[in-house]
Image (cartoon, rainbow, N blue to C red):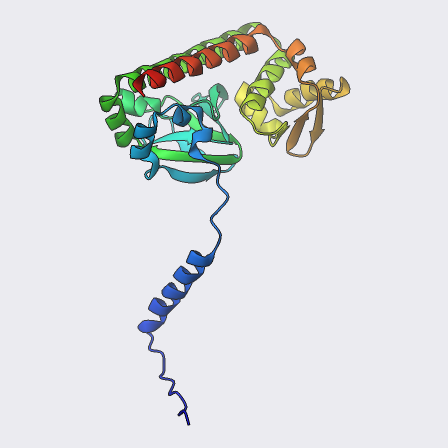
Length: 275
């Protein structure tokens, strides 16, 4: 006959240790989180396999939520950010608090390029525009890859050139085109970087990007909804007619899109040669 097992009192010192072991067992049995592959980002996708393997374990997944600040203007960050399904804006702010967007980056690029190019720090604040997934990598590791790979350096410089062109075109657009045209350009660029035609973005955030009052965005969006180009709902804009929006946008959208496509094509050629 088996004797009853004696239950010893649990000491206060051992309780946290056993609790941690229990949580570890649960974590081991839990299903893996449903994160998108880092190589959804086109910069990471263009890495040769041998180079990607060197950094794969150091890529940290991030849940990028709308409004999150990845880094502040002039503050030296230790990371480079690669959006996957999120879209991030680099925003410039004046002394009076007025803001305007310099450029935005989705799965077509990276943020934090000055950090490994030798700059003091970014000239704008990186703010998540639409929520989604992304990854970050320590800038020193990316710098190491640049030293190891000449084609990779050329690819990143080509991407930086694309961002400069985007910034310059945005400045011209603000000066010469109507708010209605600017809004269409911005929504199309967000759509190009989004996995869905339903854009989780508010009129207030669009107003901050374009440096105008929220009421002006509401009026411009109202015209697009009346023309059945978009559908407005609280915190969301659904694109119903892409062609109609392209027809209403200024030529700046086409200029930026072509430059982005050329940049990624050139980057892929550089990496293919490296492989």
